[in-house]
Image 1 (cartoon, rainbow, N blue to C red):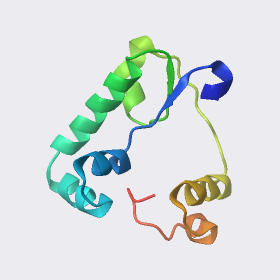
Image 2: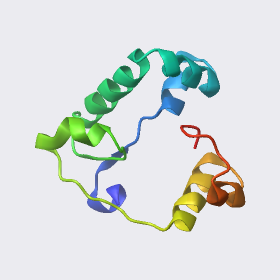
Image 3: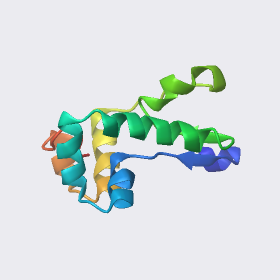
Length: 107
């Protein structure tokens, strides 16, 4: 959708943060379980990137931090479609994603 509108797509995630910190994704998840600093920094980074100019923000939470600056579009998809998209994005087996055989926060 972003490309059709001529906007940037912003979807800064823990995967991106882990790369920037040069630590494994799993280590970042472990740290974030006991330290809220990582969630807060993720939100700040997404907002900062989004405020650079017109964009589509792919986030379930950061959109609420930009309510006065945003138009919200909700997408609806079946569990099978969502599972397949997660599998493609995460390079996982679609059957695994569709069955829900993944841990929360890792897909």
